Image (tube, rainbow, N blue to C red; front, top):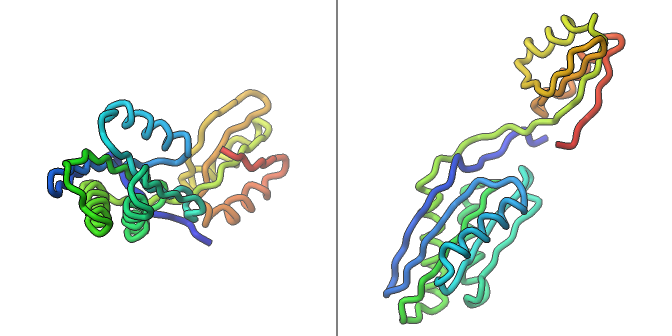
Length: 201
């Protein structure tokens, strides 16, 4: 079972020039296709006078979603080299966009592949690769009298908890690292009257 993945810490930029053409590169940590669309829309507005906005992205810890887009460049000369840079660093939840300002001289397919690959690599090099753990989220419901028993398990495993409701009937939500989930849930199940519900956050 996969318990972690690597991604980038923050937004970063790069630049590559070849025979008058300028390739501006942008790397972003992302978790949804909506986030990707927002970044692309923003860049298209800001750099509306550029000839091409090419990109590659990978989503989800298991890399189950990925895409490459050449945006009018010859097939596989832009998006694929960008995506290959993300893949070569074994990154997930990353978008890299390379914007080209045409300089008047055709670079040929080989020149384009090199330019898009180099620009994408530079944006990623100017970032920091971080390890992220995969979590599952649960809602825990219990009677107020069980508070100490529930909080003892939360403290023991240093679980992130949020959305508390502490009345006579209590509930809270926790994030549990996927590799620990079975062990921690078994402990909660031993508390008579404690109910668990897996959340899709």
